[in-house]
Image (cartoon, one colour):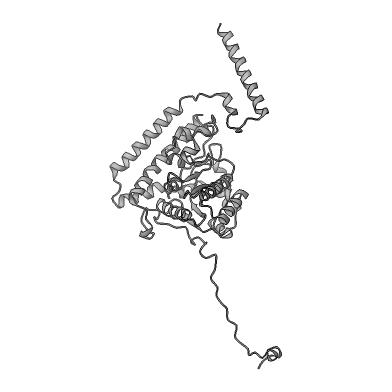
Length: 388
């Protein structure tokens, strides 16, 4: 029986059919669980096709061992008063080193204040790396020479710089990729939104690498976001994303390799979230016992990325006792050289405070510089009279 409206239209009733349309967000979503190739015992669990080259993994292991020894030495230097502050990245070695090894020398890296290990993994002089944390210069290394931006303390501001540089490089026809490190707390900042949105719209070749170490200083992740994962934030910008076990060196290198290849191919930005953990306090000035338990730290100590990779490489015959001992000897020599050089007091010129503030010094800056110069001259004259 037809309804009045159907009769007027001369139609017959039809069953409603739902047309299933493809979900445009499907290709952007990360895996439901973080990508993992090695389990916590070092056994291979992921697809064999995703494994990086074994020689690359041996290099990754070496740099992680040296990087951890560097990190431990820096913590000791802070306690000795040689550094003003030091944000340790112990426990995050797979992220710090694995991400760096996915880059070409011509690519750019944008670090935070916690990426000292990543900087030395890019073969930047460790003393130059620590110059900022020592407090005696703006940036101890040449950013242009190393294709590495200065370490950034304000949260997420470097993401905008990375997006802009990547876009500029692409406009000039270069296949440069920018990799920007950020912490989980930085994803709550406006700069992160602006950078990812800009990069997505203009297809800037930038990889946003989020190290989710569970705390933004003392604030747990649960008080920052209600998203299923930080990687899921990418879909809102039209940016593909992936989440990875950040304590699995094979998986980190594999996922970041794929993200860098995506960006380099002109397909736009990529967002990677690495699930990891900061073993040490936020900095030497932080008391982590106020907001996390010892049992929690112990659990993550059992997920050591270096031990995980070493077990795997021993299993495939790429490492033995002699090779491991040689790597540790190299790490000790690296730390000893750093101790020796950091024991030397730097030659500091107070007038250098006014260098690089502006390309062309302002009248006020010139006046301030002259005041300091006059004070130094007066002190030198008094010291000379005292000696006579």
